[in-house]
Length: 100
Image (cartoon, rainbow, N blue to C red; front, side, top):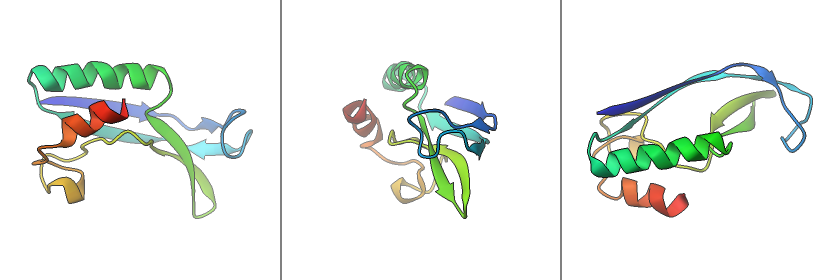
């Protein structure tokens, strides 16, 4: 199994964000991929997306800005199926490739 752990620190939003100059809360994020050829290919694509700033976004929640997952789907659980962002989900890797 491949896992991706990211700690986004709190900061202030920049030009182009929903509320430039406003502070936002960070967070700890974890995603999982199968440890096979397709999972490794997907990990490389997700790394490039992260480096381009496409993985996370800022959203308002109860009057606070916070970092959330962006439009790229991530599996945040090993179980629970598609409805709970987990596996099994036979279409997941194809969906990620289509977005990327």
